[in-house]
Amino acid sequence: MGRRVYVTGRVAVEVDGQIVIDERRFRGKQGRMLFAYLVCERSRPVAKEELALVLWPEEQSDAWEAALSALTSRLAALLSSEGLEDLGMSFSRQFGQYQLKLPSDSWVDIEAGNSALDRAEAAVRNNEARNALGPTAVAASIARRPFLPGVDGFWRESLQGKLDRQLVRALDCLGEMQLEIGEQQTALEAIKLDPYRERTHRALMRAYAATGNRAKAVPPTTSSGSCWPPKSAQTRSRRPRRCTWRFWVKRAAA
Image (cartoon, helix red, strand yellow):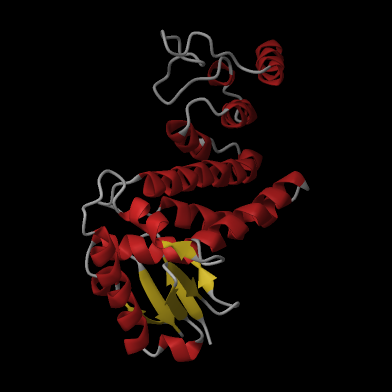
């Protein structure tokens, strides 16, 4: 039986291809945040104080315990109403701690993206870039989805940052495949996401060189067309590593 949990894009639970809990049924930002956090941290019990800090990072009212109790009671009722406990999805609440448990064969989107990215990068390291297409597409697709849009807080921002970095790494893998045909679009997209990622700049130089476009291959450029690294009061001290400089010089001398 296929059980899938989505915490990126629209938060949802799916069983055998059918959505059994849609995002609307979590009833609000905090309901979605609570479920997503417990999914991501399901390997351990989470103390109520920790949950309160995640749900109300800026300021907690004097009634936060009552509010948290209401949220967790609603989540427990939601899971039981769909018979998910019979399918191995349980939610325990005891001694001021909360834990969501999923069957071991459950598929969680954010974890599937990480796993797919690991496989893609392994293929690239083994000079099998063409075998990275499938897992790269999975990792990039998941990383492109918004994570809890409209929700504020340090935890959401931290996870969104990880997804952004995952997307850049996935684009790096896709870029390695596209180098064989001299396609530079993926590297340009990755540079927009992270202008200082040297691996991406080297890939872009290689892609331009592969098509004989020496003018663009040297020097490396940002998406805005300026010389890399950008020079400003904040970035003046930032310089490429020695391997990137050697790569640059080699392209200039070609």
